Length: 259
Image (tube, rainbow, N blue to C red):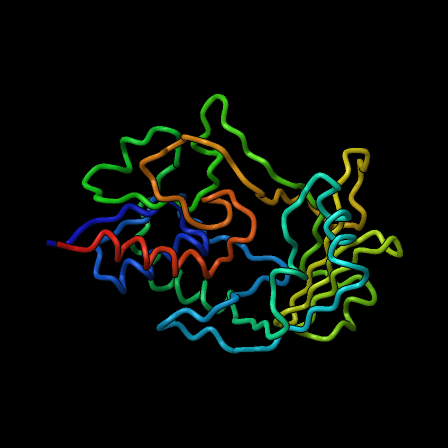
């Protein structure tokens, strides 16, 4: 008997889950506003996705200025004791084209999107669904007393300020020193991102066009406990990659096998 999975969200993570469901032989529908997400800056896949042309692999060079400890304090403050990218990522680190993958996924799975404004009522999504996988920000299901920890940053994507235009492609510079205000400069697939720490006292962006981005760190919540929460924002957890949504979905679907 074919089983049905309801997928919440049609961003890159949501469509990665749809791809996993399709490969695994599950029936599925995607519930979301029917709008393709706009990708900004040096975003990329850390792993290839089966049956999708993602271009690559391209070797990414990480350059660290200062120490990992200095970088951690500059970005997250002295209270954060988690690891940072210069520690997490190995020397042999590769990139695949997220935009190319997302374009393919949208063309393939856009017809499966049921246009719906997601809200905190769980009933609609569980109709005829054996499983619900949510990739939308987990804060949507927040309940009183829940804890959502995050870090705000300033980010400038796809606009090259001065020297960044000359930065070599497939390089990422992590700066933990006090020599400059920014902490991360990335150029991948000729797309650039520059990031600065966020301080409440900064009323204006550090560069024209920079915007505030909220990066999840961790959460303690019982919101929508019957859902499987995947993706960095869906799980609200630091270190989750876009490609992880596909591979984690494959495991979830395999563990709840079609009978």
